[in-house]
Length: 304
Image 1 (cartoon, rainbow, N blue to C red):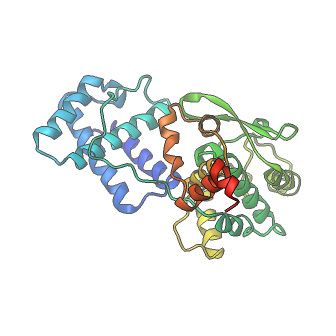
Image 2: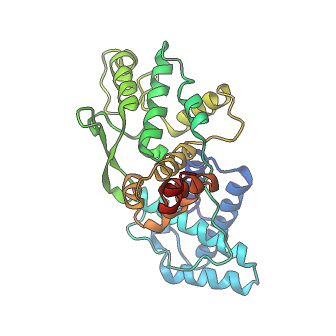
């Protein structure tokens, strides 16, 4: 495989490992799919991802079908390629996304893992506000849960993107699209303490455009935040796996369970297509029963 194709695959795998916290087997499956695609393109003279075209990808999928691969394997290859080209587009390594609109038959969409309110409370209260690192980590966790940002959006935030008067962020998301995302009182309180007590201490008189920084004054990385998150989740006694995306999933799910409309959640998450947001409508059966009992006229009338 040409070196002009493989580095981007490695960068993508690193990104999804950190942002989505995918299991090792899943990451390896992505790797196999994308390296298979790279080899296919190489044979056809494609030397860089920006040279790949929709026709190439249609031919690739046709070749997979010709090999009699299962519908599930082909569906996974479609997901791998789609996510990869979105990554390249976001990183501005390609000008146009050549991925064709193809159905994903055979691939069941996995419901997102979310934390309950109790576990969220335990996690957010874990960083010690008596320490500089604790103040920073608490501010990051509070803001992530309050806004539903992607971890890449969180660590790339710059100080000027935070409006403390209006309690909102100006976020630059996928496709360089900007959106306003509100955050609440507790996130604001944590941010203010971090800015006044920790960030200045870490900078030691230097300047930085980045909002969240390390003790050495450098910008916080995705890997650095994920490591801190895992530490706090373990210390909080949370037994399930917690990733930055878990907080994003929890943010969206809890808003919808609380009565927020789907369009508003879509806007805050920065989803281009509302069908992506609809996966968060998997509210629990007990919650649905409670909503029915509380709002259905016959139930209200009976008082039961």
